Length: 559
Image (cartoon, rainbow, N blue to C red; front, side, top):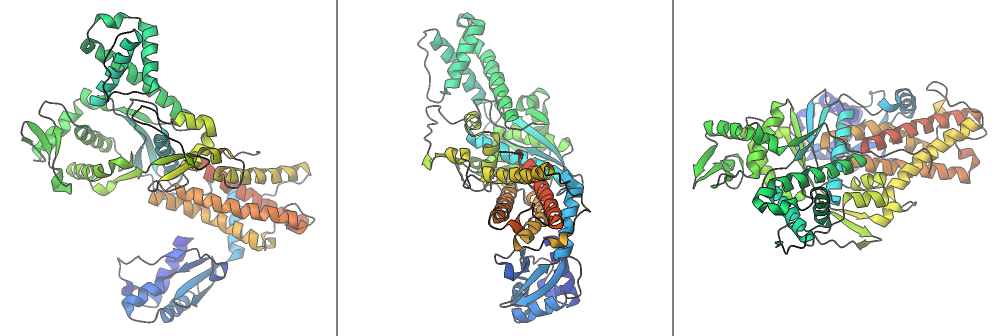
């Protein structure tokens, strides 16, 4: 609907010979939903923006633009220009009510579109090092990545979900040594345990498990000889636990890509050789450097150290080259907020590889603060203690965890209250939305129990839906496809939670009105009104179910 109105405004500007005043690049004017119903269903500030560049009064321009829209039929019922220069749009209620029929006809397909035109997109998310269990921060990234992938698929993109396994380098070596030292300690050996080793209880658990399986045989060899086995043992078991947790969280991947494969097939060396031919890497002080300063980075970066060990950047160059070699035209990386400084570096890598940096989107996920009834839950990472995603899932459930993680933009820090997520009350957002869906199902079930057949798309007189509360619900239904497309364009799944919160509030208000006035009930004494309202509820149930599905949250029929 917003796009339709924008198109109508563009047509009016051309008709009034005003388009040139704005200029092709100026899109600072907006079409938005007013806070007050008397200001219309949509409103634009285009005349206010135009006045500053055209040197004419904004209200005069608003009236001229509105006059240019008067002969427009269809979704717009009327247009008005109001001080200081807004143009307000009032939608055609009769035509928009027909959307209810469309929803009931399309069912699961309502809200889907061909926006992406089949573009092949990779979404890489979570990608936590296999050195320990997933924590709540990883959970937020998992919910974001999975919901975003769902939304992109719903808007016509071909989506490939991928987890990048960092299984090479110093952290893997520290993991292996940590388990080995705990293994010796379990046998009563006074083994040193440095501060930078992994201290979580899961390390002791792995050591005990290995001791049960292999006994004391690893005491007969040196640490250097035992290390490769301990690294592999710990990595594979931690990775298996990560996979189990994510699957239970509703996240499944098309591929688990291992960093080690980039070395096994010589991809890292091949890509660095290619950059050397282009003059984009050079030798200095025994190390190999990437000319990242040529692509906006503050300085050049080492890709191979003087001792021959590669850096993370070397692997990331090869990995991103591999992504495009596999045919992805667009790549979306979801990282923790602590990687902020790394973004320009990778953008430079993309450019060095001969690609438009714009084909890479990096979403940085801000921290999650866990609360319990408003009181922060203490965590001590130095002691190896943290709240795992598994613990959160077990306590509040997958639905509540996913919804709460998606309540705010990934760019904002998130307070996650564990007790709130379990309460069955208005303040719990996921409960409030799921309860709305359950109420819709209950109404439809009650109708069937009373012997009323549920109306099909053509079986109702929708002009009977004249209450203000019903019109708000109709507008919610009409707005849904726009919310999905905007979420896809801006890569912001939280827009769907905002939408659902608003729709649920509108529906609960409508439902509660029926307790005050029998005539306002869905199933009332007027058979024709009952059929119209039942069709409205059917459409609302579909919209809520579809939106929750994109978020990876279930839509219960009873609560």
